[in-house]
Image (spheres, rainbow, N blue to C red):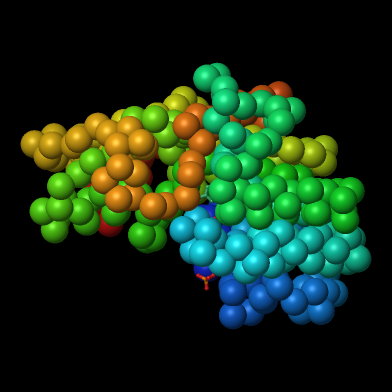
Length: 285
Ligand SMILES: NC(=O)c1ccc[n+]([C@@H]2O[C@H](COP(=O)([O-])OP(=O)(O)OC[C@H]3O[C@@H](n4cnc5c(N)ncnc54)[C@H](OP(=O)(O)O)[C@@H]3O)[C@@H](O)[C@H]2O)c1
């Protein structure tokens, strides 16, 4: 297959380029294609004539989205609509990446693909807009909702925790924000498998298996890095806000149930195993 990747310079984009090595990939980073321009999307897709487009480009800084909601909608909502329009016009399947944050946190068991989204922050609203606009513009759209991504060579949560340790900063993480840390390398192979198995259009949840709070994730990072000597305070979101945190509201629970992909035989391994592999590769790098 000939596959265009938008946002190819980001952490998932880079993993996809590796996972799709047996296909012909066209990597379009932000400088190559700004998805806020419909004309640029149409020109690029007409030129390359891809079989599929994997749309990773997004404004992912949730705090920045909160401060610039119009820009968040322009990139994550309208930009995704543009990619869908251009994909439909050039006859390419579309895989648009979305997020666990479209859910409102009102459940205590994993959200299925058919569960009703209820976004709580600007980023999540803009991503849900993107999902709806893409599916309306292009019937052959696969929406892949992922959760808490970390990828190689990127300033992800794993690296932020270790940087805080290196700088001697005190660590405190919330126990009431629960989802699933997910390796971009493993997500990328799952997305490749969806395309290779010619998955039907619609919504697919794809994360590593299991669930964790931010606190659990941080503890596991320290264990794998051999730093169990470091203390981590467990706090609640309310306590964090009482101490001056003013970031976006997050769902208390947004783990994904990966039902539709599993029905196709596509299942990512438990999150602790994937995280261990990340740390093993990090040590040997
Ligand atoms: N990170 C997570 O925890 C997470 C969780 C669930 C779902 N997702 C979704 O997964 C996808 C990939 O995320 P990621 O973590 O790989 O994000 P990322 O590393 O931030 O990469 C996103 C890329 O999109 C580019 N971009 C931003 N605005 C653009 C525009 N107007 N036109 C074209 N490119 C633009 C960025 O370029 P610049 O750096 O130049 O802005 C960046 O290279 C996104 O759809 C995200 O919403 C992410």
